[in-house]
Image (cartoon, rainbow, N blue to C red; front, side, top):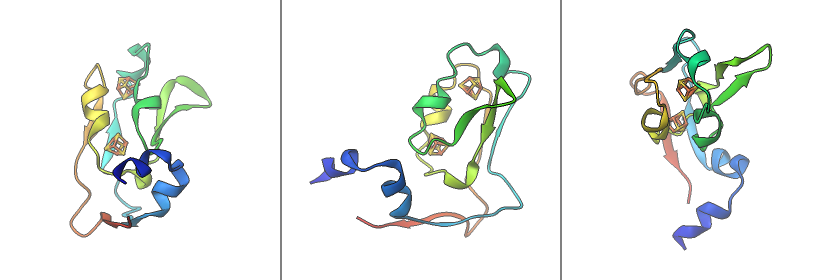
Length: 100
Ligand code: SF4
Ligand code: SF4
């Protein structure tokens, strides 16, 4: 039963999560001076919502699609250089509830 979540695509998981997005204020920032020093860039494959991607204009840097964040906390633990500044979204914003 609970393992069904692992069979869902990212799009399915995001569809089942209701958000209130604060487009004026990101709750996630990365340090552009630190990320170029990170060889493995684990954030780009460890985040279940694919929030972090290599910047197509400069693959040493990272783009952050904060509005997709599922608030799981994984990225903070896997970032080896402490580059991620993550806060819970402002009150009333972020994940509201999940279906199933
Ligand atoms: S894992 Fe951390 S240091 Fe490495 S690229 Fe991602 S945010 Fe930057
Ligand atoms: S808290 Fe979870 S979903 Fe949000 S950016 Fe970090 S790893 Fe991705």
